[in-house]
Length: 445
Image 1 (cartoon, one colour):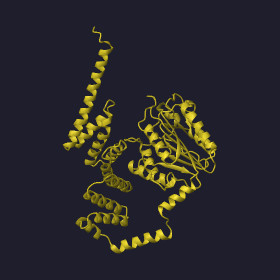
Image 2: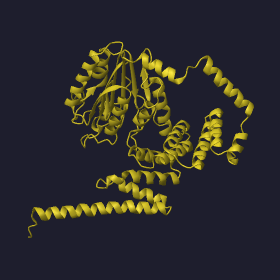
Image 3: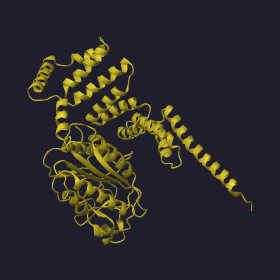
Image 4: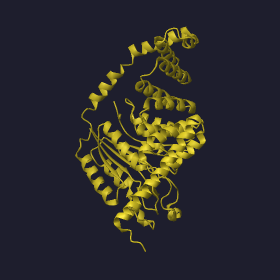
């Protein structure tokens, strides 16, 4: 028998790795060729196979998501296209401006008109292109405003387009469709409201910022994905928690972030979190707890599951998992907070199928409301949430979007989340909120 030696084995390993990488790159090339030749279904298959390979060249992911998104777009699968376009933007594709444009069209096709308007705004900000393209985007967005029954904004977009290219026949004809008397009335009403009762947006934001300038905000954010094979690994929670932590920091939260956390790590962080809340001013402290991962309901208590949990029997749940009502929410209520926010994206499948009979109903239970608390669930009590197909789970994906918009109360934020999740899940997932807060809370002013 031949003795290869360490050097020989290393050469063999390198040869195998190069061969594997070459095969994965050929998958990408095949997908690219199919896309160029208009074989979009075959391109989607190639790109999907590429993304499912753990040994792939991950620096190609951004281009693969973009091209697969375009392939979905060409085949009118706009829901899948949106997911891939968003992934390409998160990975910082160089063609970000045009991706926003595609997103605007896909959202409009699906009836997500507010999202379409936002995407057009992002496209207009990113792109410094030809006058023809600028006019085209303004014309397209004006049609979305008409569907939103906002004729004044539709007319304004067409006017901007006409100013870019005076004499444009298509835009001129569109402008002539509007009833001038009706538009004059709308403008007069808008101006009257602004003078009589509506302060300028900047004034509102400055007043809020002044009112809450001394508020201290603390958040504990946990995302658990890498569970044992018996429990089942999850795709999105670490990304969800990482992105949520980054977004909360932009809203002036001091954030503790834990990913793939064990029982001991969660316990230590909960104690540190409680110390922060206890030390705060009672009238000027806000606490927020976010968890993405496996959750389980036992009787009327919800438990979050650490990655090292070993559950064989029912009583292992209260021994190795954390009760949200008794340990998280109760401690927040007993601290000096004026407001306690709990967000649970933990209503996926039952992680302990052997205990299905003893656990009873699937999903999470609605918790008793603690003093000054706002509790948000990814789905209604007793129901199961849908995992995301992109970087984030469906629920957290929409929470992140809503948190980025300033001047909205917490109730408005989660109402928008509910509307969008219902639409994106074909009315299969209904998010759930429970509140007894007094006063207002804004993530962004």
